[in-house]
Length: 252
Image (cartoon, rainbow, N blue to C red):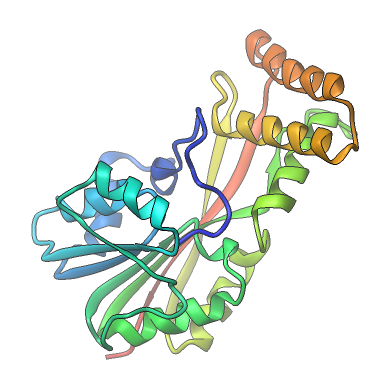
């Protein structure tokens, strides 16, 4: 479930973000956590839900989102997979219904994320797994100098779309408070240099937002976006976001 971004930008490929830096065996190991019997996948577009559903041994994968439009899009992408319109903080499923619950770039967008984590614990069977993958969005940067104006664009985007950019730094405590036994928090850097895509959309959205608010002129916004593309063309672009993952278990 995601209450911030619709992940439908021209360059967006957040469906792959949770696998950044992993080779294919690593991706399979990550997915296998969710594939034993049933998976509840709280993620927007349905891309990863469909991947999990196709893994050998998966009985059922369910994706949820509060937006009927987003669920309709997911159903079109994966018509054989079950998607439900619902809020992850008040799930319509019986207790102990799933073997695994996954939040992917989700909790940082939700007010009162502790309610969603508590719901995950409720619907998990004893011994079930919780996997959280989210951005440490306070680290989002495209700056190459101290006062780089492109960084103002990125900061504006994060401040507009992300409810809590620091959430992953509290993940172990958050899941423990819900009754889980958390494992280690792992960091996954996401870097764009040669062919920027996602971080470029952060610059664009931020520049347009600043122009809409009247903070800068439309001409300045276009100049900022052009500067980002100039850097990409001449090899001086830098974009980076730290992501983090945490695997936890409900006590048996």
